[in-house]
Length: 236
Image (cartoon, rainbow, N blue to C red; front, side):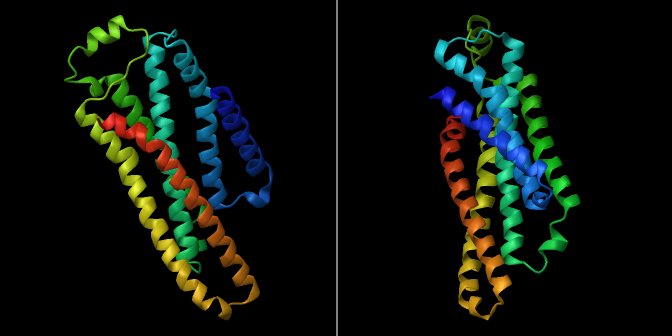
């Protein structure tokens, strides 16, 4: 099962990366966000999941403490980065549907570049800073002995950093996404009432934007549902 999940994650996202990179007509602000998110998920599948699979099957970590920290740092960084990307896509769809006439002036390529820099740099600084400083383990009784004696790559968060990770990496961006998509669907219902007054081209574009927002909303819901147990466990 895990091998199948890795295969789908790697090659599915690789196909997305190649498609958006190759076809110039796909070089839009929205697709650049999706491209970056595909890179994030590709890296998760290619560099993180295989080692996690070995640890799950063998119930042992064979790669040393330093690589354990590197592995967990990248795992944490890429997971939060993926959530930040979903939040960014939600903001993009919000402007496309709620403010369509201002979308092209608000959501520009330079803005997307700055947004992507934020999506990658903040999780990276947080993950590597917390893991390598071992601030997450402050106050956990017996953690040093556990690390010295264990071969399972144990990483446990104390209450402070567990709560910080839950709030910053899951709850806050998740709440933003839920609020944004709630607003999008409310505006979509209003648009439906006035849709007969639009030209055919405007009508088609609005339908495409609404369909894209609905699809991304479903993806967001499934993603948050799958990640909630992981972040909730860290919180505990």
